[in-house]
Amino acid sequence: MDTGFIYCLLLSGPNAGQSIPHSELEQWQPEDGLLWVHLRYSNEEARQWVIDAQLPPTETDTLLAEHTRPRTLSSQDGVLMALRGINLNPNSAPEDMVSMRIFAQQHRIISTCERQLQSVKDIAEQIMAKPNSIDSSADFLVSLCERLTHRKMELIHNLEDQLDDLDDQITAPISSSLRLDIAELRKQTVTLRRYFSPQRDALSRLLNDGHVLFNAEHKLRIREINETLIRVIEDLDAVRDRASVTQEQLQSQQSEQLNKRLYFLSLISAIFLPLGFLTGLLGVNIGGIPGTENSWAFAIFSGGLTLLVGIQMWFFYRLKWL
Image (spheres, one colour):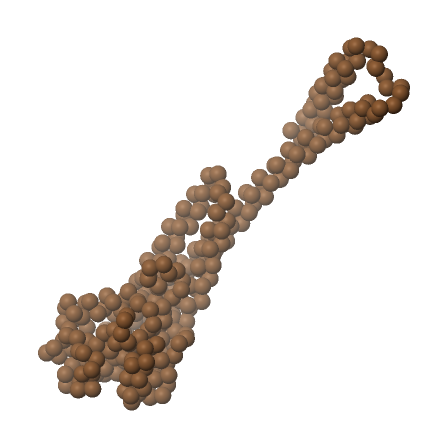
């Protein structure tokens, strides 16, 4: 993404699969084939090209907006979609989703993003490797939505595997980072849920609008994508609920361990309380302390303390404190 023009590809026609230098985009005509221009919206040259493309104001503003919410807008000019994909870039969190905007017309597709999106890269590689495999704007939108949804499924499966590992750690000696790992997993599910739901609504809107770009086969594929995304959201909710149960189980187990330690300390305190009282009483440095003249006094006193401990242990046992 060193330049603002990431892809300038022809999707159909005799030159399908070929890239056009962005300096020659002004020479393109609809007769040359379906054109896809993918831009980095923060680049000034790319922004100016979008402004000069004579698009409707709403479409221009959305393509160049820094922050967008997943949505679909159909008009006579074409279909505008704002979508989000899983962030698979190095040193990035998957829930920090990548935003993408697409304006699809019959003979031209313009899309923008800031960070790399693997699904877009896959489509570009497919177009260059297999010309005419995607030969219409509807095919492009549906293929992109399929790839975005597929990667969401993969992410949910990874979250489920992580949660299974965390569940296994509950039965093993608890590590200090386990509580933080569960909290981080719950945070991921909440963040993803916030982005997945609007995208589901955007696909439903696309399905219900019935734009002329889409034929019956496209609508069927969109319906399948929407159903898959609904299942993804349901699985995400299930992961979130399981994470909550796991966290509660961890807290219960930690509370039980703490109670056992406090109970043990209480018993120790109960045992040594009378011993401390007796030793403190006989340790005062005043006259009249019994046994000061008897050489067996210390042994007798120690034996009495031992006997007292034995009586306490028997008493605790009878009360089922031990």
